[in-house]
Amino acid sequence: MESHTPTPVTGVLRLCLHALLVGLLALAALRSGGDAAVLAAACATGAVYAAGALLPAVRPRSGAAACWLALLGAAWLVLLALTPNGLWTAFPLYFLQLHLLPMRWSLPAVAATAAAAIGGFVLHGQPVTPGTFIGPLLGAAVAVAVVLGYDALFKESERRRELIEELVSTRAELADAERTAGTLAERERLAREIHDTLAQGLSSIQLLLRAAERALPADSPATGHVRRAREAAQDNLAEARRFVRALTPPDLERGSLTGALERLCEAAPGPGPVVQFGVSGTPVELPTPYEVALLRTAQSALANTVRHAGAGRAEITLSFMDTSVSLDVVDDGRGFDPAREVGDTADGGFGLPAMRSRARQLGGTLSVESAPGQGTALALTLPLPGEEN
Image 1 (spheres, rainbow, N blue to C red):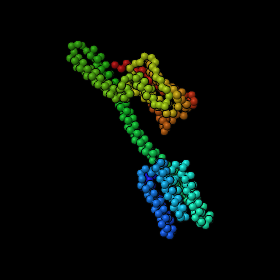
Image 2 (cartoon, rainbow, N blue to C red):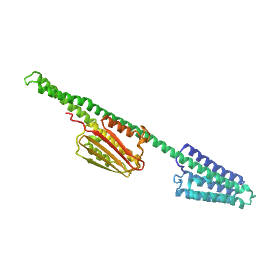
Image 3 (cartoon, rainbow, N blue to C red):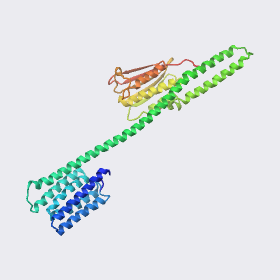
Image 4 (cartoon, one colour):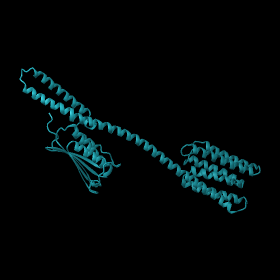
C-alpha cells in the first residue's frame, strides 16, 4: 500500500495506521472474554489488512485497492456482527477509504462505514446514548478533515517543489544566456573597434603610401621601400578585415544582412504575430558595425513585439536610399505611450535605450511612434558611409 510519494513523514503515518488497527483489533478480541469466534474474526480482519499492506498492487485509485477494501470491509462486518467492540475499528477504516478511493467514492464509503458501526452497536442491545451516534460520526468527520488537509498540504508542497525546480532550471538557462550575450557583445565590440581604428588607419596609410609612390621618381631609391610598405599595409588591412568578419555575429556569418533578417522573420516564435520581411531600394554592402546595429535592432524590436505587443501581424522593412539605410519594424499590437519610456525595467524597458545608443554611435537616429491600442512603428536610420578605400 503506497502513498503519494514515499517520504519519512508518510512512512511514519503508515506505521501509526498499522499500529492503530492492530491495537483496536486486539482490544476487541480481549474485551470479548476469550470468545473464539471473535478472536478468529479479529485475526481474519488483521490478516486481510496485512495482505493489502504488503501487496504492491494496492495503490490509491486502483481496482486492486477497491477489491481489497471490499474484502477488508466484509471481514470487519463479520467482526462487528459478533461483538460491539468492533465499532472502534471503523476509525482506521475511514483513513484507508479516504486514501485509496476517489473522492466521489470515499465519502459515501465513510458514511456507510459510520452507519454500519452505529447500527451494529445498537443491534447488540447496547445502551443508546448521544455518544453512540456522535462517536462514529465525529471520528468520520475528523478522518475526512485530516485526509483532505493532508492532501491540500501535499499538493501545495508539490507545487512549491516544481516551482523551485523551475526556478533553478531558469536560473541556469539565464546564466547561460547571459554568458552567450556577453560573449557576443564582446565580439561585436572588438569587431567595431578593429574596424573603426586599425582597419581605418591601415586604409589611410595605404592611400598615403600610394600617393607617395606616385609622386616619387621611378628611379628613386625610396620607391621600392614605399611600394613594399604599401603592400604590407594592404596585407595587414586584408587581415584586419578577416578578423572583423570572424568576429561578426553568427547570424551574419551565414550570409548577408538581408538573409539574416529573412531568417529572423521565419524563425519568429509561435504563438505570435505573422512576420513579413521586405527590402526597398538597391542593397549595398555595409560595414560590419552597420549590419550588427541593424540586425540587433530588428531582433530586439521583434522580441518586444512577441513578448509585449500581443500583435497579430508585424512587418520588417530594410530600405536602401541614396545617402542612408533604414530599418522599419511595424506591428498592429496594443501599443504603448513612448513618453513613459524608462531606462531599465524588469519587463524589457532596456531595449529602446540600447537601440538609441547603437544609433547614436553610428551617427543615426531612432524614432518610435506608438499609442495605446494603435500598434507601434519603429524606424532606425543610419547614414551611409563614404568610400573607405
